[in-house]
Amino acid sequence: MAKARKPSSGSSRHSKGKLRSQPKSQKKKTFPPAPPAQRGGVELVDPRVQAQLKVYDEALALFHQQKFARAKQELEKVLEGPSKELADRARMHVKIAEQRMKPSHEQNPRTADEHYQRGVAMMNIGRWDDARESLDKARKAAPKADHVHYALAALDCLTGEADSALANLKVAIQLRPENRYHARNDEDFAFLQEDPRFTELLYPEKDGTAG
Image (cartoon, rainbow, N blue to C red):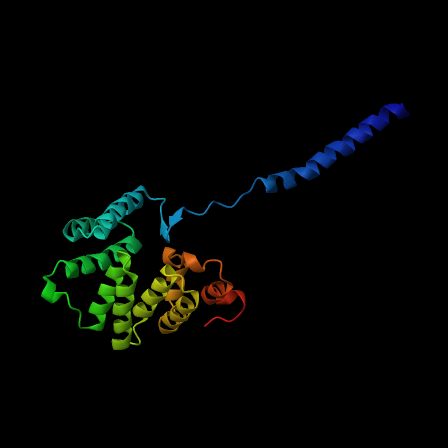
């Protein structure tokens, strides 16, 4: 009889062990939800946003081909979509397209904003020297315009000038702290992704130097 009790005692301990291990196995099955897919800071979960992004890409292709009238028509469709981020980008390109469609005698920029718009337009078609010339003029005319410093930082990234890009981005953030968050999702700054100075600038909370 004593021998008969031993197996039952062992099986009892074994079953208790199973009961204890159940909560652990349940914990392992709990996973956090996957983050929504993004492209350049724009969430792509909503099919309407995906459709809006498709129109935006087609409009940019026309813009880069300097088919400004057709690009403007497509960009205006993007303004009606659900993504504010895409709408803001489209709105900026609409202004540039309108500027580029003006007669040649009206295309000579005079104000800081006109120099800025021309600089961004030159960036979009890969004319880096012309872009820098216009953005430098815009910065000289409006030294406290954060968007001009931000655009210069993006241009520096596109031309491989890390030190200048970081300096311009730092000024843009000092003038308008929200630029820190824009830069985190801006594909134009991909060149700096591996630079620790870029990480420190965009994520100061990690080392306690926010501001």
